[in-house]
Image 1 (tube, rainbow, N blue to C red):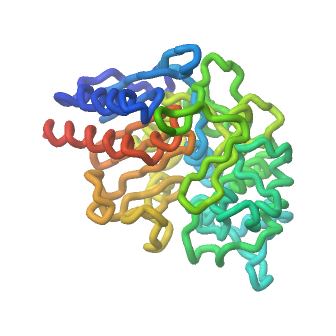
Image 2 (tube, one colour; image 1 turned 90 degrees about the vertical axis):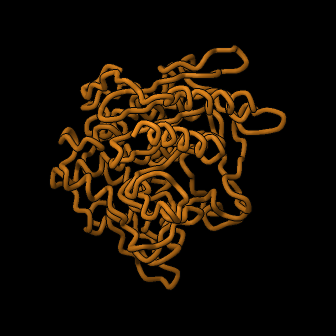
Image 3 (tube, helix red, strand yellow; image 1 turned 45 degrees about the vertical axis):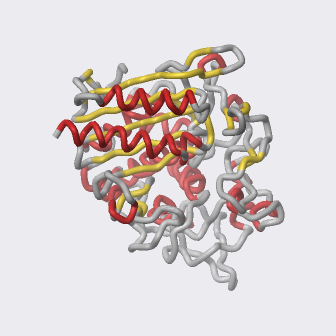
Length: 396
């Protein structure tokens, strides 16, 4: 893993690699996963790296550490970090009305009043926005307005998507509720406007370039390095079809996926879902933030990212968690029934990814898979977590 932030090979605690390999192999044997890359760093040392299974089942192409994945919501902490670099530079105020930079984006509340939205609310998903894929059916307000979730073949620009988004009333007064949403897409437009360049160029300038994340961006060029996407099914996962709709939660219409979108240079840059990259690249970002070495952000802003910004609001389907600036933050390990330390950062990606950073344990873990939704929210995620902490407990 060549990087401007070197991760030296370290010695893992007793049985750590064996425990992780067992969890990965069982998921492959059960055909819950097709392939996976798992990386674990502690104290700045890479103590476990593993590529297992297949990147593409038809050609029997094996998964490798260099495999590139469609990131879906793993894009969010990358773009959020880019926005916070602008905050550090004094070019963006966390609590200023974004209307200063995006005057055309002025969604209103149901009673007709204009909503005042800040960058902090976009970063913490308290801005009053939603996602089309959360709607109960194809007749929801976002669907009727033609709003794109950033993973389909919409054929529209980011500016047009924001225009459509702003035509739908806000779901709540900004700052009063938490709701996972297209807020990071709006944040991406904000970054573009401040710098006057595309979001791809901006993210490269602010984050991926300085960290040497050479395989991470909004357009992929080499299909032979891309992981093919699969959907959990019986008796085994099936390959995700172009335009296939897959529900994330019961009772919701789901996401209209376009696996081909990542190769389309004309597709708008979705800050919340549009990037591709390797597990190694993403681990560099997590470790940079965890170490707080001043490479990208001052310690004060990293602490802001790490603080629950929801004023104690409950996250739907995530007891014990709050939300910081770009990812969830564990408030109550007991309520969450988790061995992770209080303050642990965590999130995932709909294409089959999970990751977490436990700063108290000086630990960063990245697990990218090509199987949705097992790799994001299935048994594999919990089993991997428990394998890691089980080995750490043994080593104490």
